[in-house]
Length: 430
Image 1 (cartoon, helix red, strand yellow):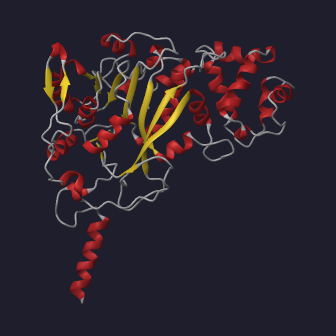
Image 2 (image 1 turned 45 degrees about the horizontal axis):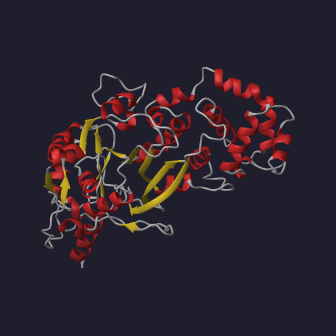
Protein backbone atom coordinates (compact mmCIF):
# COMPACT_ATOMS: atom_id res chain seq x y z
CA UNK A 1 0.00 0.00 0.00
CA UNK A 2 2.77 2.41 0.95
CA UNK A 3 4.69 1.72 -2.27
CA UNK A 4 1.54 2.31 -4.33
CA UNK A 5 0.93 5.59 -2.48
CA UNK A 6 4.54 6.70 -3.06
CA UNK A 7 4.31 5.95 -6.77
CA UNK A 8 1.07 7.95 -7.05
CA UNK A 9 2.61 10.89 -5.17
CA UNK A 10 5.66 10.77 -7.44
CA UNK A 11 3.51 10.94 -10.57
CA UNK A 12 1.58 13.92 -9.18
CA UNK A 13 4.79 15.78 -8.27
CA UNK A 14 6.34 15.10 -11.69
CA UNK A 15 3.21 16.30 -13.45
CA UNK A 16 3.11 19.50 -11.37
CA UNK A 17 6.75 20.21 -12.14
CA UNK A 18 6.19 19.77 -15.87
CA UNK A 19 8.37 16.66 -16.24
CA UNK A 20 7.56 14.09 -18.86
CA UNK A 21 5.74 11.02 -17.53
CA UNK A 22 7.28 8.88 -20.23
CA UNK A 23 10.83 10.18 -20.15
CA UNK A 24 10.64 11.44 -23.73
CA UNK A 25 11.58 14.80 -25.21
CA UNK A 26 9.79 18.05 -24.54
CA UNK A 27 7.49 17.50 -27.51
CA UNK A 28 5.56 14.92 -25.49
CA UNK A 29 5.25 16.85 -22.25
CA UNK A 30 1.86 17.04 -20.67
CA UNK A 31 0.07 20.33 -21.23
CA UNK A 32 -2.86 21.46 -19.12
CA UNK A 33 -6.21 22.01 -20.82
CA UNK A 34 -7.34 25.49 -21.77
CA UNK A 35 -10.77 26.75 -20.74
CA UNK A 36 -12.33 29.02 -23.30
CA UNK A 37 -15.42 30.09 -25.17
CA UNK A 38 -15.71 29.55 -28.90
CA UNK A 39 -16.08 32.49 -31.27
CA UNK A 40 -18.72 31.80 -33.91
CA UNK A 41 -17.33 31.32 -37.39
CA UNK A 42 -13.70 31.01 -36.28
CA UNK A 43 -11.98 27.61 -36.55
CA UNK A 44 -10.07 26.48 -33.47
CA UNK A 45 -6.77 24.64 -33.94
CA UNK A 46 -4.58 22.86 -31.46
CA UNK A 47 -1.07 23.45 -32.73
CA UNK A 48 2.12 24.88 -31.34
CA UNK A 49 4.10 28.05 -31.62
CA UNK A 50 7.56 28.07 -30.14
CA UNK A 51 8.71 30.92 -27.93
CA UNK A 52 12.23 31.89 -26.96
CA UNK A 53 10.87 32.14 -23.43
CA UNK A 54 8.39 29.24 -23.38
CA UNK A 55 6.10 27.27 -25.72
CA UNK A 56 2.88 29.17 -26.20
CA UNK A 57 0.58 27.01 -28.31
CA UNK A 58 -0.32 23.42 -27.62
CA UNK A 59 0.92 20.67 -29.94
CA UNK A 60 -0.83 17.40 -30.55
CA UNK A 61 1.71 14.63 -30.31
CA UNK A 62 0.69 13.16 -33.65
CA UNK A 63 1.47 16.46 -35.39
CA UNK A 64 5.21 15.88 -35.10
CA UNK A 65 5.40 12.10 -34.79
CA UNK A 66 3.16 11.19 -37.73
CA UNK A 67 5.13 8.84 -39.95
CA UNK A 68 2.50 8.40 -42.65
CA UNK A 69 3.93 8.53 -46.18
CA UNK A 70 3.93 11.95 -47.78
CA UNK A 71 2.93 12.73 -51.33
CA UNK A 72 5.77 12.51 -53.80
CA UNK A 73 4.24 15.12 -56.11
CA UNK A 74 6.28 18.33 -55.84
CA UNK A 75 4.66 21.53 -57.11
CA UNK A 76 6.90 23.67 -59.30
CA UNK A 77 7.54 27.29 -58.32
CA UNK A 78 8.74 29.95 -60.71
CA UNK A 79 12.10 31.44 -59.86
CA UNK A 80 14.05 34.31 -61.32
CA UNK A 81 15.45 34.10 -64.85
CA UNK A 82 12.68 31.70 -65.85
CA UNK A 83 13.97 28.71 -63.82
CA UNK A 84 11.76 26.37 -61.84
CA UNK A 85 12.51 24.52 -58.65
CA UNK A 86 10.53 21.78 -56.90
CA UNK A 87 9.40 22.76 -53.41
CA UNK A 88 7.59 20.20 -51.29
CA UNK A 89 4.30 21.47 -49.88
CA UNK A 90 5.26 20.16 -46.44
CA UNK A 91 9.01 20.07 -46.60
CA UNK A 92 10.33 17.73 -43.93
CA UNK A 93 11.71 19.63 -40.95
CA UNK A 94 13.98 18.17 -38.34
CA UNK A 95 12.16 19.17 -35.15
CA UNK A 96 15.23 18.53 -33.04
CA UNK A 97 17.18 20.87 -35.30
CA UNK A 98 14.48 23.55 -34.86
CA UNK A 99 14.59 23.18 -31.10
CA UNK A 100 18.36 23.53 -31.17
CA UNK A 101 18.07 26.80 -33.09
CA UNK A 102 15.50 28.10 -30.66
CA UNK A 103 17.71 27.26 -27.67
CA UNK A 104 20.27 29.66 -29.09
CA UNK A 105 17.78 32.49 -28.74
CA UNK A 106 16.94 31.77 -25.11
CA UNK A 107 19.66 34.17 -24.05
CA UNK A 108 17.83 37.02 -25.75
CA UNK A 109 16.32 39.56 -23.38
CA UNK A 110 13.15 39.67 -25.48
CA UNK A 111 10.68 36.82 -25.70
CA UNK A 112 9.88 36.00 -29.31
CA UNK A 113 7.46 33.44 -30.68
CA UNK A 114 7.95 31.18 -33.68
CA UNK A 115 5.55 29.07 -35.70
CA UNK A 116 6.89 25.57 -36.38
CA UNK A 117 3.84 23.49 -37.31
CA UNK A 118 3.55 23.14 -41.13
CA UNK A 119 -0.19 22.39 -40.98
CA UNK A 120 -0.92 25.54 -39.02
CA UNK A 121 1.41 27.52 -41.30
CA UNK A 122 -0.57 26.29 -44.32
CA UNK A 123 -3.84 27.61 -42.87
CA UNK A 124 -2.23 30.96 -41.99
CA UNK A 125 -0.85 31.30 -45.52
CA UNK A 126 -4.29 30.65 -46.99
CA UNK A 127 -5.81 33.41 -44.85
CA UNK A 128 -3.24 35.92 -46.13
CA UNK A 129 -4.61 35.76 -49.69
CA UNK A 130 -1.14 35.25 -51.13
CA UNK A 131 -2.46 35.29 -54.69
CA UNK A 132 -2.66 39.08 -54.54
CA UNK A 133 0.26 39.96 -56.81
CA UNK A 134 0.02 43.67 -56.00
CA UNK A 135 1.10 43.22 -52.36
CA UNK A 136 4.44 42.38 -50.78
CA UNK A 137 4.32 40.18 -47.67
CA UNK A 138 6.47 41.20 -44.71
CA UNK A 139 7.02 38.20 -42.42
CA UNK A 140 8.33 39.50 -39.11
CA UNK A 141 10.52 37.19 -37.02
CA UNK A 142 10.13 34.12 -39.28
CA UNK A 143 12.53 32.09 -37.14
CA UNK A 144 12.98 28.59 -38.61
CA UNK A 145 11.14 29.64 -41.78
CA UNK A 146 8.21 27.21 -41.62
CA UNK A 147 5.63 29.88 -42.50
CA UNK A 148 8.04 31.32 -45.08
CA UNK A 149 7.94 28.04 -47.03
CA UNK A 150 4.17 27.84 -46.82
CA UNK A 151 3.73 31.41 -48.06
CA UNK A 152 5.77 30.57 -51.15
CA UNK A 153 3.87 27.30 -51.63
CA UNK A 154 0.57 29.20 -51.40
CA UNK A 155 1.55 31.39 -54.36
CA UNK A 156 3.11 34.49 -52.78
CA UNK A 157 5.08 36.33 -55.46
CA UNK A 158 7.31 38.27 -53.07
CA UNK A 159 8.02 37.57 -49.40
CA UNK A 160 10.35 39.71 -47.29
CA UNK A 161 11.59 37.96 -44.16
CA UNK A 162 12.55 40.50 -41.48
CA UNK A 163 14.52 38.59 -38.85
CA UNK A 164 16.20 40.26 -35.89
CA UNK A 165 17.92 37.16 -34.48
CA UNK A 166 21.26 36.29 -36.06
CA UNK A 167 20.90 32.60 -35.19
CA UNK A 168 18.19 32.16 -37.83
CA UNK A 169 19.74 34.25 -40.61
CA UNK A 170 22.00 31.54 -42.06
CA UNK A 171 19.21 29.05 -42.78
CA UNK A 172 16.88 31.78 -44.05
CA UNK A 173 19.51 33.02 -46.48
CA UNK A 174 20.06 29.48 -47.74
CA UNK A 175 16.33 29.36 -48.44
CA UNK A 176 16.63 32.76 -50.13
CA UNK A 177 19.25 31.38 -52.53
CA UNK A 178 17.01 28.40 -53.24
CA UNK A 179 13.93 30.52 -54.04
CA UNK A 180 15.54 33.43 -55.86
CA UNK A 181 13.48 36.57 -56.32
CA UNK A 182 10.48 35.21 -54.43
CA UNK A 183 12.20 35.66 -51.06
CA UNK A 184 14.35 38.43 -49.58
CA UNK A 185 15.91 38.10 -46.12
CA UNK A 186 16.90 41.19 -44.13
CA UNK A 187 18.44 41.50 -40.68
CA UNK A 188 15.83 43.88 -39.34
CA UNK A 189 13.39 44.13 -36.44
CA UNK A 190 10.08 45.40 -37.83
CA UNK A 191 8.82 46.49 -34.43
CA UNK A 192 11.82 48.77 -33.94
CA UNK A 193 11.46 50.64 -37.21
CA UNK A 194 11.91 54.40 -36.66
CA UNK A 195 12.34 53.93 -32.91
CA UNK A 196 14.16 56.91 -31.37
CA UNK A 197 15.04 54.92 -28.27
CA UNK A 198 16.86 52.20 -30.24
CA UNK A 199 20.47 52.81 -31.16
CA UNK A 200 21.15 53.26 -34.87
CA UNK A 201 24.42 51.38 -34.38
CA UNK A 202 22.58 48.16 -33.50
CA UNK A 203 22.46 46.01 -36.63
CA UNK A 204 18.71 45.11 -36.59
CA UNK A 205 17.85 48.83 -36.53
CA UNK A 206 16.48 50.30 -39.74
CA UNK A 207 14.20 53.19 -40.61
CA UNK A 208 11.05 52.63 -42.63
CA UNK A 209 12.45 54.92 -45.33
CA UNK A 210 15.61 52.80 -45.62
CA UNK A 211 13.60 49.59 -45.67
CA UNK A 212 11.09 50.63 -48.34
CA UNK A 213 13.77 52.30 -50.45
CA UNK A 214 15.90 49.16 -50.35
CA UNK A 215 12.92 47.05 -51.41
CA UNK A 216 11.87 49.50 -54.13
CA UNK A 217 8.42 50.13 -52.65
CA UNK A 218 7.14 53.64 -53.33
CA UNK A 219 4.43 55.66 -51.63
CA UNK A 220 0.82 55.16 -52.67
CA UNK A 221 -2.32 57.17 -52.28
CA UNK A 222 -4.34 56.00 -49.30
CA UNK A 223 -7.22 54.73 -51.45
CA UNK A 224 -5.12 52.90 -54.06
CA UNK A 225 -4.87 49.52 -52.37
CA UNK A 226 -2.66 47.53 -50.01
CA UNK A 227 1.05 47.68 -50.91
CA UNK A 228 2.26 45.53 -48.00
CA UNK A 229 0.80 42.80 -45.80
CA UNK A 230 2.54 42.25 -42.47
CA UNK A 231 2.28 38.94 -40.61
CA UNK A 232 3.72 38.32 -37.16
CA UNK A 233 3.12 37.06 -33.63
CA UNK A 234 3.04 39.86 -31.07
CA UNK A 235 4.88 39.20 -27.79
CA UNK A 236 2.14 38.79 -25.19
CA UNK A 237 4.03 40.62 -22.46
CA UNK A 238 3.91 43.91 -24.40
CA UNK A 239 1.23 43.48 -27.05
CA UNK A 240 -1.07 46.10 -25.50
CA UNK A 241 1.53 48.86 -25.74
CA UNK A 242 2.57 47.78 -29.22
CA UNK A 243 -1.00 47.81 -30.52
CA UNK A 244 -1.69 51.21 -28.99
CA UNK A 245 1.42 52.73 -30.54
CA UNK A 246 0.68 51.18 -33.92
CA UNK A 247 -2.79 52.73 -34.09
CA UNK A 248 -1.24 56.11 -33.22
CA UNK A 249 1.23 55.63 -36.09
CA UNK A 250 -1.59 54.68 -38.43
CA UNK A 251 -3.76 57.71 -37.63
CA UNK A 252 -0.84 60.11 -38.02
CA UNK A 253 0.32 58.26 -41.15
CA UNK A 254 3.85 57.95 -39.91
CA UNK A 255 6.50 55.26 -40.35
CA UNK A 256 5.32 52.45 -42.70
CA UNK A 257 1.88 54.05 -43.11
CA UNK A 258 3.45 56.88 -45.11
CA UNK A 259 3.53 54.36 -47.97
CA UNK A 260 -0.20 53.56 -47.93
CA UNK A 261 -2.67 51.23 -46.27
CA UNK A 262 -0.44 48.60 -44.69
CA UNK A 263 -2.48 45.51 -43.77
CA UNK A 264 -1.58 43.97 -40.41
CA UNK A 265 -2.11 40.25 -39.72
CA UNK A 266 -1.16 39.57 -36.11
CA UNK A 267 -1.46 36.73 -33.67
CA UNK A 268 -2.63 38.35 -30.43
CA UNK A 269 -4.08 36.97 -27.23
CA UNK A 270 -7.82 36.40 -27.15
CA UNK A 271 -8.07 38.69 -24.15
CA UNK A 272 -6.59 41.58 -26.15
CA UNK A 273 -8.77 40.77 -29.15
CA UNK A 274 -11.93 40.92 -27.01
CA UNK A 275 -10.85 44.32 -25.70
CA UNK A 276 -10.20 45.54 -29.23
CA UNK A 277 -13.69 44.46 -30.33
CA UNK A 278 -15.56 45.50 -27.18
CA UNK A 279 -18.77 47.48 -27.64
CA UNK A 280 -20.01 50.73 -26.06
CA UNK A 281 -21.47 50.01 -22.65
CA UNK A 282 -18.81 47.44 -21.70
CA UNK A 283 -17.31 49.51 -18.91
CA UNK A 284 -14.52 47.01 -18.28
CA UNK A 285 -13.11 46.37 -21.76
CA UNK A 286 -14.25 49.40 -23.80
CA UNK A 287 -11.18 51.65 -23.93
CA UNK A 288 -9.55 54.27 -26.09
CA UNK A 289 -7.65 51.58 -28.04
CA UNK A 290 -10.98 49.86 -28.81
CA UNK A 291 -12.41 53.08 -30.26
CA UNK A 292 -9.28 53.95 -32.25
CA UNK A 293 -8.84 50.50 -33.84
CA UNK A 294 -12.53 50.14 -34.72
CA UNK A 295 -12.50 53.66 -36.14
CA UNK A 296 -9.35 53.19 -38.21
CA UNK A 297 -9.59 49.60 -39.48
CA UNK A 298 -11.81 46.86 -40.76
CA UNK A 299 -11.12 44.14 -38.19
CA UNK A 300 -11.63 40.47 -38.95
CA UNK A 301 -10.91 37.40 -36.85
CA UNK A 302 -9.34 34.86 -39.20
CA UNK A 303 -8.74 31.95 -36.82
CA UNK A 304 -8.18 30.94 -33.23
CA UNK A 305 -5.43 28.65 -31.99
CA UNK A 306 -5.59 26.94 -28.63
CA UNK A 307 -2.74 28.20 -26.49
CA UNK A 308 -0.68 26.03 -24.22
CA UNK A 309 -0.45 27.36 -20.68
CA UNK A 310 2.83 28.98 -19.76
CA UNK A 311 2.79 27.05 -16.47
CA UNK A 312 1.11 23.73 -15.77
CA UNK A 313 -0.13 25.20 -12.49
CA UNK A 314 -2.10 28.01 -14.08
CA UNK A 315 -4.65 28.26 -16.88
CA UNK A 316 -6.75 31.31 -17.67
CA UNK A 317 -10.13 31.61 -19.44
CA UNK A 318 -10.06 32.60 -23.12
CA UNK A 319 -6.64 31.00 -23.39
CA UNK A 320 -6.31 31.28 -27.17
CA UNK A 321 -4.20 33.11 -29.70
CA UNK A 322 -6.20 34.91 -32.39
CA UNK A 323 -5.02 35.66 -35.90
CA UNK A 324 -6.57 39.06 -36.59
CA UNK A 325 -6.57 41.06 -39.82
CA UNK A 326 -6.39 44.85 -39.37
CA UNK A 327 -6.97 46.54 -42.71
CA UNK A 328 -7.05 50.38 -42.63
CA UNK A 329 -10.26 51.85 -44.01
CA UNK A 330 -9.76 53.37 -47.48
CA UNK A 331 -11.93 56.43 -46.75
CA UNK A 332 -10.57 57.10 -43.27
CA UNK A 333 -9.01 60.43 -44.31
CA UNK A 334 -11.69 61.60 -46.73
CA UNK A 335 -14.05 63.34 -44.28
CA UNK A 336 -11.80 65.90 -42.62
CA UNK A 337 -9.44 63.71 -40.61
CA UNK A 338 -5.79 64.05 -41.62
CA UNK A 339 -2.33 63.42 -40.24
CA UNK A 340 -2.18 66.96 -38.83
CA UNK A 341 -5.27 66.81 -36.63
CA UNK A 342 -5.16 63.08 -35.83
CA UNK A 343 -3.16 63.84 -32.69
CA UNK A 344 -6.06 65.90 -31.35
CA UNK A 345 -8.45 63.02 -32.12
CA UNK A 346 -6.27 60.61 -30.15
CA UNK A 347 -6.11 62.92 -27.14
CA UNK A 348 -9.87 63.62 -27.29
CA UNK A 349 -10.71 59.92 -27.11
CA UNK A 350 -8.10 59.16 -24.48
CA UNK A 351 -9.36 61.91 -22.18
CA UNK A 352 -13.01 60.96 -22.69
CA UNK A 353 -12.43 57.29 -21.87
CA UNK A 354 -10.19 57.72 -18.84
CA UNK A 355 -13.42 57.59 -16.82
CA UNK A 356 -15.98 55.70 -18.84
CA UNK A 357 -18.81 56.49 -16.40
CA UNK A 358 -18.38 60.25 -16.63
CA UNK A 359 -20.83 62.40 -18.61
CA UNK A 360 -19.72 63.44 -22.05
CA UNK A 361 -21.28 66.90 -21.69
CA UNK A 362 -19.05 67.64 -18.71
CA UNK A 363 -15.96 66.83 -20.75
CA UNK A 364 -17.06 69.03 -23.63
CA UNK A 365 -17.85 71.95 -21.33
CA UNK A 366 -14.34 71.74 -19.89
CA UNK A 367 -12.91 72.49 -23.34
CA UNK A 368 -15.52 75.06 -24.35
CA UNK A 369 -17.95 76.45 -21.79
CA UNK A 370 -21.62 75.69 -22.57
CA UNK A 371 -20.82 74.22 -26.00
CA UNK A 372 -21.42 70.62 -25.03
CA UNK A 373 -25.20 70.95 -25.06
CA UNK A 374 -25.24 72.24 -28.65
CA UNK A 375 -22.98 69.44 -29.89
CA UNK A 376 -24.99 66.69 -28.22
CA UNK A 377 -28.26 68.04 -29.60
CA UNK A 378 -26.75 68.21 -33.10
CA UNK A 379 -25.69 64.57 -32.79
CA UNK A 380 -29.08 63.55 -31.31
CA UNK A 381 -27.41 62.22 -28.16
CA UNK A 382 -29.03 62.51 -24.71
CA UNK A 383 -27.55 65.14 -22.42
CA UNK A 384 -26.67 62.56 -19.79
CA UNK A 385 -24.89 60.15 -22.15
CA UNK A 386 -21.74 58.60 -20.63
CA UNK A 387 -18.41 58.59 -22.40
CA UNK A 388 -18.39 54.78 -22.26
CA UNK A 389 -21.67 54.64 -24.21
CA UNK A 390 -20.49 56.55 -27.30
CA UNK A 391 -19.60 54.45 -30.36
CA UNK A 392 -16.43 54.92 -32.48
CA UNK A 393 -18.44 56.40 -35.37
CA UNK A 394 -20.07 58.87 -32.99
CA UNK A 395 -16.68 59.88 -31.60
CA UNK A 396 -15.39 60.52 -35.11
CA UNK A 397 -18.44 62.63 -35.96
CA UNK A 398 -18.10 64.51 -32.66
CA UNK A 399 -14.45 65.22 -33.45
CA UNK A 400 -15.25 66.56 -36.91
CA UNK A 401 -17.99 68.84 -35.51
CA UNK A 402 -15.55 70.16 -32.92
CA UNK A 403 -12.92 70.64 -35.60
CA UNK A 404 -15.23 72.86 -37.65
CA UNK A 405 -16.46 74.83 -34.64
CA UNK A 406 -14.73 78.02 -33.57
CA UNK A 407 -15.66 77.27 -29.95
CA UNK A 408 -13.02 74.52 -29.80
CA UNK A 409 -10.27 76.35 -31.67
CA UNK A 410 -8.19 76.62 -28.51
CA UNK A 411 -8.44 72.87 -27.92
CA UNK A 412 -7.13 72.08 -31.40
CA UNK A 413 -4.43 74.74 -31.39
CA UNK A 414 -3.05 73.36 -28.14
CA UNK A 415 -2.55 69.86 -29.54
CA UNK A 416 -1.22 71.24 -32.83
CA UNK A 417 1.38 73.57 -31.36
CA UNK A 418 2.17 71.87 -28.06
CA UNK A 419 5.56 70.32 -27.57
CA UNK A 420 3.79 67.31 -26.05
CA UNK A 421 3.61 65.05 -29.07
CA UNK A 422 2.24 61.63 -29.63
CA UNK A 423 5.19 61.12 -31.95
CA UNK A 424 7.54 61.12 -28.95
CA UNK A 425 5.43 58.41 -27.33
CA UNK A 426 5.56 56.36 -30.50
CA UNK A 427 9.32 56.48 -30.58
CA UNK A 428 9.71 54.82 -27.21
CA UNK A 429 10.37 51.15 -27.72
CA UNK A 430 7.99 48.84 -25.89
